[in-house]
Image (cartoon, rainbow, N blue to C red; front, side):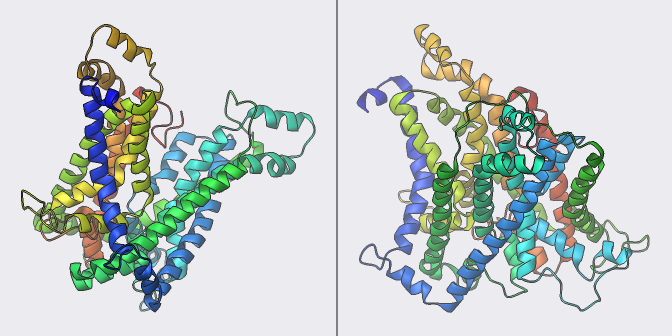
Length: 568
């Protein structure tokens, strides 16, 4: 250790990175554990047992587990079907199909919920136009357990699609060729070769969909509250919204329960994947490609139908609602108006503040994490103790990313509700606490592309520069930053895409004057200003698509697989 820390600025920089990581990732989560698992005299599980005696907590825990499990099954089926058709067959325009399939994943869950509420309700402009809308006054079909499960499954199916598609691309083609030469029928090939090889990807997809649904706030709040189907994240939000910071100890216990379930699922996934892992003796030189023949139009029609049902219908309804004077009116020449857009873009100070705040906070977090990841990635590509320490930083980031955003929020409230020592300034109630929470929650997203870029660099570059006498910061500035900057920019844009519209992390941290886009849209919908929520949601969807297209500009200078919708 002494040797590491005394080598010029390299060791000192690593020490600073480690301290920042402990402050960002370790401190809030440790305070959360201390608060949730302490009885005032020391560590204890008594608060946990006490919380489990509450019927409302037990009911919310059951609803969380039930909706997460069922929606993960739904996402697994839908995502796998799409991945197999697009990944294994000769359907046309694969790049466009992948982009459209993954687009719902980039749209914030609460925006997705608002879009679907307007797509299937009695006031749906599209269903009214088709004369198939439910009668006015009838209960919205999505305000139910089935509605929550359905929408969580739709939201997380692209995650499963990504993982299964990656698994399919790694399958050795010669195994399938050998089976065909041996006369095996397609059903036998699928049952005895394809499914066993895909099991690790299917397990990972299910676990990721489960954990994502467990921490989801936007969909479960907008659909679950009217249906009295309360999950744990919604219960935490309701208690803090009703009683304020006085109930921090209670909500910390609930946050610990969510974190515990998430960690158990992730650990079970890793253990199950290791058990199901099959060693392959070769890798394919090109992706497996099944020629569908006369069935190709059918497969393409099925994929387009899924895209139309999961993307086009809700987005079209969202847009139609944003263009009428009053929610419930059919979209026609006499009801058409742009007043909702003028209201949110020009007149409403709260929306203007929200756009400015989200741009500032998400943009600052993205730039900061891009540079932070560039330095951490450098040490990940080193040897010995430095690599281990950088691996520890990356591991803390992965844990923070796996834990639901609402749990991160509770941890940061506990850490910063009191004024900072020495300066006597409180971050609670300011945009600064949201900024720090974003750094904690989204660091893992920024590091992945940079880590991949460093993995492709030859370490002899660093050795040669050292022999030439170049100091640490000169090597970083002249050699490594120019090489990894496209990937760092890609990671920063992915962070910005994720943070710009999110509501899960900021739902507990925003305050008057520090609204974000996500919280403002949620408050508009929750308060009955549906057309304004639709207009603001439409703008965020457009911004998301434009950012995704902008990310494509960097694709030629980045390692393969960095941009999820690119079919390199």
